[in-house]
Length: 182
Image (tube, helix red, strand yellow):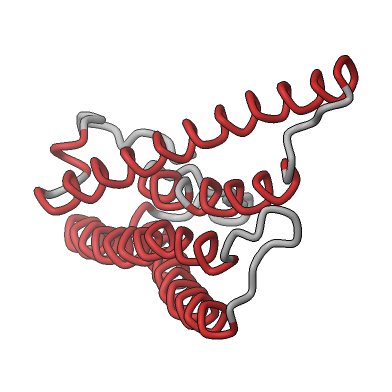
């Protein structure tokens, strides 16, 4: 996580502009939905395990449901994580660098995150359309597989937007810090 910038309040109105606050709010809603999906999966798993052990009646297709829903739920967290500087970051070599250098490096990293999010959005969408056209379904419940794939697209699209937004903010901050030292 990034250390707070001295003299700058750590509230969203300073860190994010108006579009960034909207992006953060949407990312937060997606992350909450992802969290609720995981809570549902935990409840389903408990019911299935207890049903299997006590009644010899597990939830049919529980593993299929777990795989499909967990994929979409996981994709929902990435944008919120990136917007909150929650990515894993190894800054051992840059800890002593001037702030503008760190912002420039963060801008490059965020650009890469945005590009990765865009590629994932595109490829998962294309894969979902291909799976829909082939009519592939899950083995036990006969659920169309493309439903799970297409449910990942909003999370990856938000990741792309978050990466590009944070890249722009870091470029602005690097420029501001670079100008301030002259």
